[in-house]
Every structure is written in C-alpha cells, then in structure tokens.
Amino acid sequence: MDLSSLTTETRNPKTMHLDTLSVAEFAQVMNAEDQTVPVSVSHALPAITAAITAITAQFNKGGRLFYTGAGTSGRLGVLDAAECVPTFGTDPEMVQGLIAGGMPAMTVAVEGAEDNAELGAQDLRDHQLTANDTVVGIAASGRTPYVIGGLDYAKSVGAVTISLACNANAAISAHAEIQIEVPVGPEVLTGSTRLKAGTAQKLVLNMLSTGAMVGLGKVYKNLMVDVKPTNEKLVARAKRIIQQATDCDAATAATNFEAAGHDVKLAIVMTLTGDSAAAAQQRLTAANGFIARAIQ
Image (tube, rainbow, N blue to C red; front, side):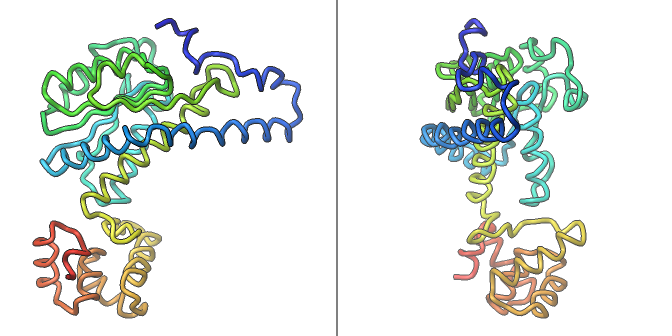
C-alpha cells in the first residue's frame, strides 16, 4: 500500500493554516481533534475484547506478552510493558516491549531498523518465543516490515498474534489472528502519528494489559492489589489500598501490611478473614490469587 494513500499521512483540512492560528485557536483545534480518538477506539471494542481474552488465556498457560513496533509505536509498547511491573507486580519477563533498533531507538531513530522484517523475527527468536506467548504488532501506518516480520515469525511458532493499526484495511491485519484497527484520520500535523494515532494506541494498550491483569486476579474491585511497594510513595499507597479494600483503620492496615511481608493482597485477605498470614496465603493459592474467591 502506497504511504500517501494512508489516512494517517493525508493532510487534515481543519488544520491547513496551523501556522497562522493564535495559541488559543491552536489549542482548541487540537483538543477537538483529540476528542475523536476515543470514539474511534470504541468501534474496535469487539476486537479488543477478543485480544484481552486471548492474552489472558496465554498468561494462564505461563505465556508472555510481547509488544513489537518501530518509532512511536515501539516506544508505547515498551512503556506499557514497563508499567506492568510496578502496577501489577509482574515479573519483567511477563510483558515485554520490543522496538526496532533496540533500546537506543527509544531516544534516537535507528536508520533502516523498521524496514527490516527479518529483524522483527530475530528479536522474537532471541527471546525464545513459544506457542504459549502472545505477540501484539503495533504500527500506526499498519504496514511496518519489522512488525510484519515479527507477526509472521510468531505465527510460525504457534503464538497468538494480534495487530494494532491506525488505518483501515491495514497490511499488518493480514498477518494476525486478531486485528485491531483504529482509524483516527489525518493528524493535526500532517504525518505526525505520535499525535492522534499515538493516543489511540496508548488507549488500546492500556485496555489490553489492564484487562488481562484483571483476568489474572491482580485487581480487587478497582484496586491494584499486586502493586509492589518499592518506595515511600508506594508503601503509603499500599497501606491506603488495604484500608480501602477492607474499611479498616490505618493502624490495622499498617500492622497487617508488616505481618504479610509487605504483600498487599495477602494483607487484605488477612484483614477480611482474620486469618494468619499462612492461612490467608493458603486461601489465595486455592483461589488462584483472586481475593473475591479467597474470602468466600
């Protein structure tokens, strides 16, 4: 598909005079365009639902989730993967972001990396991809060779493949079992897909990772109960989560937080059941980590 035919590359008729607008006018125009993005995402909810379901099933097999992309798309995948560790207490290996050109490409463009389909396959090969894993190929244009190469390799080993593009009838959709297409139309700044396309991708990735973690029992009600309290702010948040989940006072939350070895989920079950740490852990293990089941 010719690049100039993609909607993400065409000029936006509403912003033809971007350089002559006042700052207030510019902000209004950009804000109006940004408001169209969640509507576009809503049209892709059936595919997003299928993707979350598939990712969760693969996690339950012990599989991992890989995001692959180039440029902004790759950076967003790396960001979402990195955030899973502190938010959900995941092992860094569980959700990983791969970007064309490697980590140097997070800050500096690596010439030619996104055009190399074999590199996309090799990066996954280097991580010993298996049939239990999931690969989400991200490309605003929907045609990035690095992403296509990765998806094709993933399919060859039997991994679940998901594509995420910001154009309709994207080329990468033909290389994935589950196709998420979120056409956002022309950018405010022509071709700058870090804008609406990037926003759409971030919204979708938020849903994929968060939805899967909910499905693994890493959320109780709407609380992040597997958060890892690795600094003072997170320790305070952890104690507050225990209070919010159990309606206990601060002193009880602090006491059980310590007794649980700083394990928020365990402290919540201890508080709700009155069990010791050992007994509460048995409950959680039997409930596969789901607090709601553990306290029944």
